[in-house]
Image (cartoon, rainbow, N blue to C red; front, top):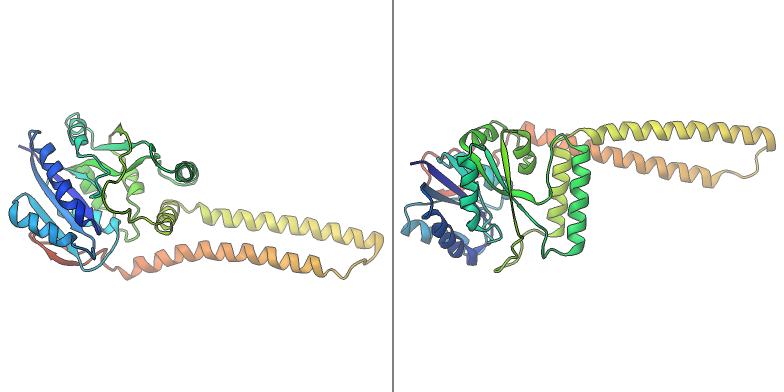
Length: 312
């Protein structure tokens, strides 16, 4: 009988650990698979770890990893994928917004031979501004990156052992899982479900963290911003030459009329702004190169009941 692994990252989700486990067991006992549930405590500051330990003591099918601090969801996903032993793994959030009732549909896609079965949610119930910004973001990112990302598709998905092993071959530190899932390719099936609103606790994603995550998505999978800097510089140079020629022609016809302070300060500000933007983009890439050369681990484990754990 095949083994299915469930990976559940958790950060300050004390009140949702027990409910998500009960719902998972309810669904998993109804399918013809053995299963293991791996909770990854991402440095929670509340009683999340305590709730996980309580389950692990009582249930043999519960595994856990606990980080020394909050390393982020990307590190939690990577830690889970490195340690699960299943023929396939299902990634799920611990906030109850990824409905366990879809597990049977995900497994059906796996049985059909798909290496990735992705759950795509609608935007029902989301604020209109957030829905608009999300739609705009995906249009922009798909137009400039080398991977195809779909609005509503997130981490909630089933991955076959081949997909897991393919993903683990990518050793980069600055990880953007949505892009990596698309980059590895392999056969894929998408199932849709209605958006589920959070019942307990508050979202851990602030506007700032979402913005940073969005920037990671744009930077991680293309070098087009660098090319944009080149084109922008070329266009500005061309316009500057045109303006210089026009100014020289005016001077030859009418002589010097104004001292030119406004023109000078405008040019300095415009060109200075473009230079700062370009340096910022270049700096973003240099920063990533710097982080990669240090080869720091993606996470550090505080405690774990998973055998032969590898922290790299």
